[in-house]
Amino acid sequence: MALYEHVVITRPDISPAQVDTFIEELSGFLKEKGATVGRTEYWGLRNLAYPIKKQRKAHYSL
Image (cartoon, rainbow, N blue to C red):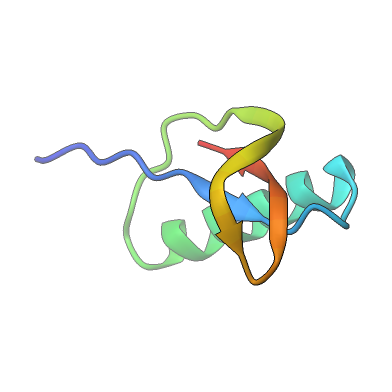
């Protein structure tokens, strides 16, 4: 079975608690569809390489 890693980028104007809630909901959705989620990491608020919709920062989660 292949292993995949995905980095999720969320808007900078939400709180880290909201990011954690979103990641839990996303993990639950993926588990419903038959995927397994090994672990999650919150990398914090970081600068983007280039602006996305005029935003220069985002919350990164693995």
